[in-house]
Structure formats: structure tokens, C-alpha cells
Amino acid sequence: MLRMLQGVLGLLMLVYATFSSAALDIEIIGAGENQIPVSVVPFGGDAELGVAINEVVSGDLRRSGLFRLIDPTGKSPHEPSEVEYSNWQVRGTEALVIGTVKTLPNGRIEVHFRLLDVIKQVELMGQAVTSGEGQIRALGHHISDLIYEKLTGNKGVFSTRIAYVNRQGRSYSLIVADSDGYNEKIVLAQNAPIMSPSWSPDGSHLAYVSFETGHATVYVQSLYTNQRKILANFSGSNSAPAWSPDGKQLAVVLTKDGSSQIYLIRPDGSEIRRLSFSGAIDTEPDFSPDGLSLLFTSDRGGSAQVYRMPVEGGEAQRLTFAAGSSYSPRHRPDGKSYVFTHFSGGQFFISTQDFLTGQVETLTDGGWEKKPSFAPNGKLILFASEARGRGILATVSSDGRVRQHMFTQSGDAREPVWGPYLN
Amino acid sequence: MNKLIISIVLLNLLAACASDPKKDSAANNQTQTQTQARTMPSGNDGQGKGAAAQKAVDPLNDPSNILSKRSTYYPFDVSAVQDEDKPLVQAHAKYLSENADRRVRLEGNCDERGSTEYNLALGQRRADGVQRMLELGGAKPGQLIAISLGEEFPVAPGHDEASWKQNRRTDMTYTK
Image (cartoon, each protein chain N blue to C red):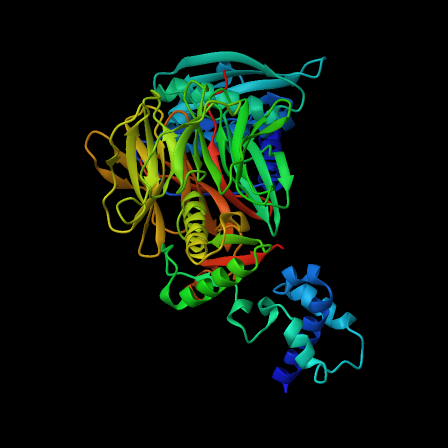
């Protein structure tokens, strides 16, 4: 009887949780192939915390495109001894997550959870994790990362962060949020446009372009102290900052010597060195993970296309040739391919190109899709899109099978970029 | 009738500007135009003093003068000044060469197609192209500053060619 009551209570809580998550409106489209069927049972103990964590973990796993979430309703085991494997096999569940959560006397939250293999009827992982007061979402993302890594063999990215710009009329905010779009924090708010946020490799700083001086100027800001300083403020435009993988320099685009060209600069603004000499537009540089080459957008061939050149100088090589224009290249973290946006027939498409084969794969159906960047594990791509007349954030799995739209509370979301792992 | 009222307002404004050189720079600023028109002394119909005002008036503020136009327009992904806009730019070049104390801020703009960074670069190239033509026509580099606003400040908010063609633009704004 008690268990049944718990089950009903759990169901009510689940419904409540669905309606209470109003900060972001998330739509998931499409289904991946070979998704792992997983059930995440709301953790026992503090039922309210259990439901809240369940919501974060389920959302993370679903969004990754690699899992099919099977509703655990009606069964709520919290310990291995309470699991009847046959019940879960019937539902098609192959991986089961159970556990308990409680608030410690010092306010910290403690979770004991287990990942069970329903087919083999064995425990794959059992862990205790804790987090600070009010850090429910961070705790959930951490659990998701552990489950994801155990089941897929790849590192999870749920605890990483994203940056983007929110525009409401003439008001602009630079936002840092969790990878699922929640837990937004305003880094900078002003009445002048902000563009092109770029994460330092250690996640401690953002470089970005601001128009507060009246023209495009590059700033670097600490996310810990909020201190900011001007990196480049030459005549004309200063833009498109991109950090080198070792964090010791940035590529920026300056017009001080003529057309938009790529330069290297130290994070303190010293030692400026010109890299490109095309006389055309060269912009949107992105360092390869080994730091040896740059992808960039150039119109030197007549239309905007993606090129690659060695950081130490030498010939640039054109990579995109399809009709239309291609913009905003960004390396996949393994360095084997890159993602970019392709403009053709009045629409933007998110595409990837393999460096070895040259093969281009289009991942989306087209629309107003700009500024793609890979998650640090290379499995998801974040980009700016439009839906219901608003600028929104969107993700697509790197195989193109699962897409997700994230609607922020108000305004237009633009210029998103996925941040690095935080170690 | 409407035309007549507008020209009277403009003449009044010209008279105001002639008496206050500092306000010349904002002649293409609609809000200020209206404010000044409202604060004009009543009874000045602009007719009697028109001739006198015309003589003292800066040609930048004369609606019948090509210099009162301050924008060049472009096809998609093009940054060269178009043939139809060349007389306009050349007229401003001549004016700047004859008025060395004048300063112009050139602001390149783009429609929303392309990446924000590419459009920033394209807007800069549009502004730079106007700057080069002004310098060829006699303006001094010190009179000019060229910047880009990219796709960040559209004057027309629509997502169609009717809006886009208004947003592919270089504005010449006199700052002094």
C-alpha cells in the first residue's frame, strides 16, 4: 500500500515537474538509431529533490540522442534488492538508474545512485555524489555524465556550459548557461550589440566583440572576477576572437591595415602579428585542436567559402565548393572534421566536412541556422536557429538524427558557442 | 499641400541652422528636425526670408541639393559603390575638399544574410569603398572615419528583399 502511494505520489510529482520547468521550453525532434533504452527512476529519500534530479538526468540523456527514455511509472525501486528485472525487461528497458537523495545537515545534497544492466542483471556502476546547496541541476548533470560515459564509452558534456547573446530590442546580454540552457547568468548587459563570444580553453574567460565604443571592439572578460579589458580597438573593425588551444594567443580580425585580415595577439593585447595577406575578407578564424592550422571564412574566390591555412604561414587551401556561400567553420574537437553553415537557396544549413575524404554531410533541413559549434566530446552541435519568429538555440546530434530547440524566456538568442570541459 | 508644408518646415530649419552652425550636423536626424521645427518662432513663413536664408545655408541641408542625400546602396554581397550612387559620393567629396573643417563618419551596413562576422567585414568594406572614393575626389583622410555596423542595426526589420535592400547601405554622417 505504501509503495503504491509512493508510486502515485511520484506520478503526481512528475506531472508537476513537467509544468514547473517554465524557464526554458524544449522541443526534441527525431529519433536516433540504436538508442539505448534507459529508465531513470525518481530517486527515493527526499522525493522532491528526487524528481528534480530525475528531470535533469532524463533531459540530458534524451537530448544526447543516444538514449530512448522508457517511462518508469508504476515501479519505483531505490535499492538493487527492490528491482524485479523481469518487470523492466518487459518494458524494453536495458539500463536502469535508481538511487536515493538526501540533504545533509550542512545543506549539501547527497545522492547514492546505481546503474543496472537489466539484460545481464548486474550492477554497472554505484556511486555517491554530493553538491552544494541549491546545486540540484549541477548534481544532475554530473550524474548524467557518469551514466553517459559508462554506457557509451565517451565523456559526457552535460556539466559543460554554453555562451550566447540575448537580444531584446536594443538591449543585449552576454549569457553563460548550463549546456541544457538552464541556469543562465548574465556576464554583460548593455544597449549596444555584442557578437562572437569565444571561450578560453580553460573556461575562465570569454573574448567577445562589443559595439559600446561606437565600433566593433574586442574585449576579454574573466568569468570569475567579471573584470574586463580591451584586447583590440584599432580604427575600423576589431572582431572574431578565437583562442589558441594553449590559451597563449588569440586570432582576431582587424581592418587597421585595409581589408578584414587575420592577426595573432597575446591575451594581454601585446605582440600583434598579421597572418593573412589576401586583400579580400578573411574572418571567423578557428584554431585546429593541435594549434597548427586555422579554418576561416574568406571571399577571396568571389563568394564566402571555408579555407584552411597553417598558423606559421603558407598557402591557404579552399575547402568548400558547393553552390552558395559557406560561413563560420569550427573544428570538431578530434580535429578530423569541422562544422559550418552553408547558405543556399535562401536558407542556411548546418553541415560538416571530413578533412580526409572531403565529404560534406548536411545535418539539418535548412532555415535560419547559423554559428554552429561542437560540444567538447564532438557528439552534439549547438547553433542559432529561428522558430515561432524568434531567435533560439538549437542542438543537433553529430549524426543529424536528433535535434532539439531551446526557447529562452524572451528575446532572441544569437551567437551561441559551446564551452570547454571544466577540469 | 503636404509638400508645401514640408518645404516650409525645412526652410525654417535651414534658417535655424544658419544661425547655429553646431546644429548642421544633425540635419538628417528626423527627431531633431521635428524638435527644431516646433521651436521655431511663429510667424516665420519662410517666404520672405527664403532668399536670405538660402545664401547662408549649408548645401548639406538644402533638400534640392544632392548633398542632402547621405546613403549609398548595394546589391547582395557587393561592396563597390554602384554607378547610380557615384555622383552622390563625388558631390560629397567635392564639398569635403572645399570645407576642410567638416568631418564625416562612414557607417557600412548589411542585410541579415551571411554570418554576423562576415557581414561586419562586408559593412567595413562598403564604408571603406566610400572613403576611398571620397579621398579620390579630394577629401582628406583626416576628415573621414569608416566603421562597420554589420547586420546589427537594420533600418528595416523585415526578412525579405524589400527590407534587405534598405539595410545594404553606407551612411555618411557629418559629425562636424
